[in-house]
Image 1 (cartoon, rainbow, N blue to C red):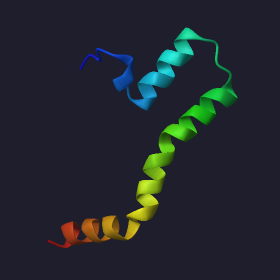
Image 2 (cartoon, rainbow, N blue to C red; image 1 turned 120 degrees about the horizontal axis):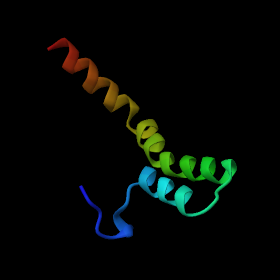
Image 3 (spheres, helix red, strand yellow; image 1 turned 60 degrees about the vertical axis):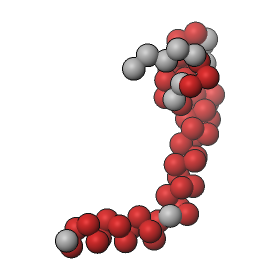
Length: 61
């Protein structure tokens, strides 16, 4: 799928583009990756019990 505008890029694609355009050091890249993965970690921590129940009920059926 081609992205027409830069506003709709995913975090990994944006990090790759930024690394290609500019010389980014390891600390900037790591900080950007951490900020990109933070919403997924928060989602997991909030819904951990619900996700575990869903996996277990799907395995038993």
